[in-house]
Length: 569
Image 1: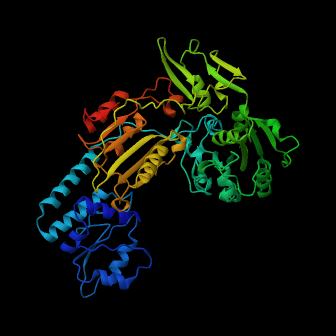
Image 2 (image 1 turned 180 degrees about the vertical axis):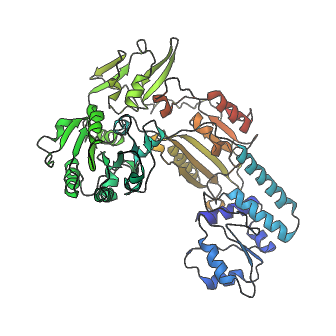
Image 3 (image 1 turned 30 degrees about the horizontal axis):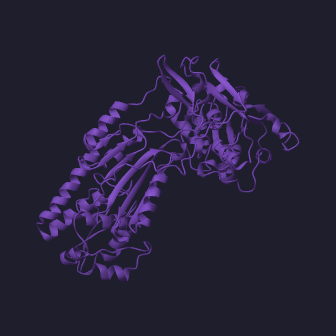
């Protein structure tokens, strides 16, 4: 897997191909099954070796087997892996292994074995320089993931003054990064178990526990059962989004509904159950709730929570609002109502106070710099029509009914826009190939750019490899695509672009371009760095009216890394 490809890349970086390895006396053993190892093949591999270096991610599963079976034999080799010959960390169990670090470790040992080699020594020294540059590089900017525009959690994760909420597994976990009085996290299905253990030793009488509907359906109901059996004072806020939103909007197994959850928790022994929703009238004649349940509009969330925190034992608040991203998908398919209304902000009336952001916590509210100062606008391309921004007391909001967003005209059939543009110089691609990092904000096409480049290389008969580091990209977080193109597929080993190895950085977002993992991959005077200067505000802007991006600091860091003649904005 990855470790094998990293080692192939490392050997290539220090100038050792298969012929050189045979000449020097290096063997490479690719493990197909790490447990249990085929010890006959291992014995054949180890015969006559002085040193075995084990390169494996995470814990030392292979290394310990080698030690147990080769130590005490007639030709016992020195075995290093997680730690070196002196007991210092060599390939730590935490984090991901890096081809540069592997190359340095292998190069040092090869030099000790074969004596001097100016070429290998020079390459190792160069890699050390790259790693030192990476260690000295700091994150100039970062993009913390945030709730989508119109996300139910913008409202559902609020708690009354004086109360505390505990996080769980799901998109609502991101409340930890906001001013939501939300703390801690648990394993999936362990939501609330931490409070059961803490409660007898705490002066706090009660907490709210966020629990996503997907996690509830998976194992969270067991946590509720545990809390009931221990008489804990806790209110479970079951956040019903009508989809397993965190992993792509899959439907619930078993067709889970709000009234079904209410009946299940009542059967477990929960007496006080309340439902909070943005559409209280939608259940009439369609839902079968247990007796004694109350239904409220989401505007009354604070009052409902204040009542529930006084209830002794376990209570449940079911917050019912469909996932905003799932609403958008369903509206495109015509399977979900699409309100014939849009909200705009009149910039001449707006005073830039930011109350609309505080009320909605919505990232579709963006700044507009005018001659009268900073104002607000609503990004209609990302707005999911939650309308919670209207809750503020503001005369600048305008609602438009019956209007449609004007779409750009297609350009198909028109004259080629590249007519007259000179052809670019072609990159001279040796066996090392070409490496690029494309970075940006999730959902803006970064992965698509990598896929298009990869397919173009494939159609030209070249080798190509892409690795996408998306994480919480859908939630406005950072996303990176590493692209390698080479004459043949066999010329590509590790795809992730290590320190100092990028030929191009295509920075689709200026903030993400200032990340350490991007700046560290740049080689001054060689890497072409093209950065987009459009200012896309992160989620912090919703809570801080005067928030601004460190644009000049970011540009300065990019120029320092790439060089003035290689940095383009």
